[in-house]
Amino acid sequence: MYPIKINTTSDYNTLSEMGFLPLMDWRRFQIDIQLRITLQSRLFGRVEIGHGNIPQANQRFYKYCWDNSLVKVCQECQKHLTQYGAIHISHIQTRGGHSERAHDPRNFNLLCATHHEQWENGDQSVMKIRKENGRIIKLLNQDYK
Image (cartoon, rainbow, N blue to C red; front, side, top):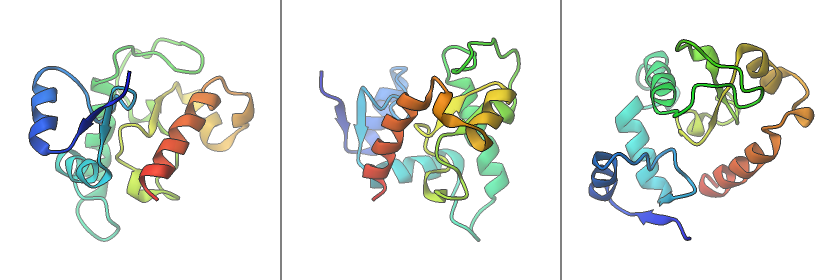
């Protein structure tokens, strides 16, 4: 099955009202990168350095990811995550190295604190999420080229 292409804000709004999560569900929905950036800015705030309230936009992004994750477990170890915390929202590609992707809902894993730390500063090569994250990185690199 091919992804459904979303070309307008109206298309996005219609699908969202139907309960779909087009920004997160990259397997089912394909959104033009310029439209995606517009939608992300509308939802979370402008993230360019020197513009907008970046900490506030970050918090909106983290809360969106948490609220829209169907299962609240660490994607690495399956530990149940009992309460919301930004510590559980781990960027696949770092905000510092890829600021234009900082609020892309495809660019996160739900992780416990231990595995968040491992993904950011440890040995990623032994992590179960590595292969899937590689697919997402490839997709992000292609979209944000």
